[in-house]
Amino acid sequence: MERFDIAIIGTGPAGISAAITAKLRNKNLILFGSGKGSEKVAKASVIKNYPGLPGISGTELRESFAKHLEAMDVPVIDDKINAVYSMGRYFFLKGSKGDYESSSLILATGVDFAKPLAGEKEFLGRGVSYCATCDGMFYKQKKVAVLAYESGAWKESLYLSELCSEVLYFKLHKEPMPGTIPSNVSVVDEKPEVIKGNMKAEVLVAGGREHEVDGIFVLRDAVAADSLVPGLKTEDGHVFVDRHMRTNIPGCFACGDVAGMPYQYIKAAGEGNVAALSAVSYLADLIDED
Ligand SMILES: Cc1cc2nc3c(=O)[nH]c(=O)nc-3n(C[C@H](O)[C@H](O)[C@H](O)COP(=O)(O)OP(=O)(O)OC[C@H]3O[C@@H](n4cnc5c(N)ncnc54)[C@H](O)[C@@H]3O)c2cc1C
Image 1 (tube, rainbow, N blue to C red):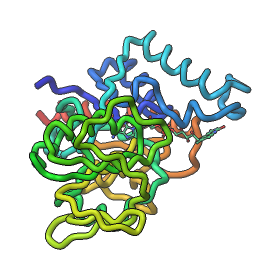
Image 2 (image 1 turned 180 degrees about the horizontal axis):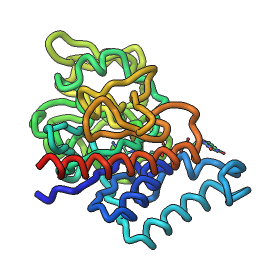
Image 3 (image 1 turned 180 degrees about the vertical axis):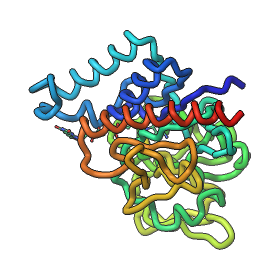
C-alpha cells in the first residue's frame, strides 16, 4: 500500500490550508473530505472578517477554496474516514471506501454539535458502529438499525440491506428519501433516545418504543475526534493541542474548530498552516532517526 507523507482529514478552511502548505513543501499528501467542501463554509450568507475578501459569501469562498486546490493539483478524496490507528511510525486510516497509510496525520474535522446518544460510546465496537462498509459483514442475516443523521447514510444502508435480514432506517436528515426502498428496509420516523444492552448493544429506544436489534449504525457527517483516533487526548470536547498544533500522539496534529474555540474561518486556516509546517518538521525528524 502506498504510504503518504501527510494525511489530512477535512475539507474546511483548516484542512484546505494545511493541504496547500503541505503541497508547497513538496510533501506527498492525501486530503479526505467531501469534494464539495465544508457545509459550514457554504452556510454563511456574508463573511465580513476574512482578510482581503470583504463581503464574500460562503458559497463564493467555498468555490474559491476548491479552485485553489485544483490550481495546485491537490485532489480531494471523497471518502469518510471512520477510524485511525497509530502504528508507531505511521497511521492506518480506515475509510468507507478504502484503507490508507500515512507517516503523519492532520485532523481538521471541525465540530459536530450533536451530542452522542446515551449508550453510544459505551457500546462502540460492541454492537454500535460508525461504518457500514467496515462492519456490515458482522451482521449478515441479522436485524440492524441505521441512525441516518445525514442523507449520505442511504447508500450505506442499501449495502446493509443486501447483507442483513432487516434494516430499520431512522431518517434524521431533512432531505427526502430516494424513490425505491428495498422490501427489507423500514423507514422509521422516531427520534432515537438511548442504546441499551448488557455485554453488547441490544435495544434502541426511540420515540418511547424499544426496538430489539443486533447492531446499530450511527451515521453522522463527523465522528468525535477521540472516537476517530483511539488514545487522543481531548479537553472540553476539543482535541488538546500545543501552539504547534501537536496532539498527545506523535505525528498527529489537529487544527481548526476541532482544536478549540473561537470557531472562525481565519483561525482555522491559520492553524491549518501551522499544523502542516509542524508535520513537515516531524517528517524531517523521522528521516533523521533512520
Ligand atoms: C452559519 C454559519 C456562519 C458562520 N459565519 C462565520 C463568519 O462569518 N466568520 C467566521 O470566521 N466564521 C464563521 N463561521 C464559523 C466557521 O464556519 C468555522 O469556524 C469553520 O468552518 C471551521 O473550519 P474547519 O476547517 O475547522 O471545519 P469545517 O469547516 O467544519 O470543516 C470540516 C470538514 O471535515 C469533514 N469531515 C469531518 N469528519 C470527517 C471524516 N471522518 N472524514 C472525512 N471528512 C470529515 C466535514 O464534513 C467538513 O467538511 C460560521 C459558521 C456557521 C455554521
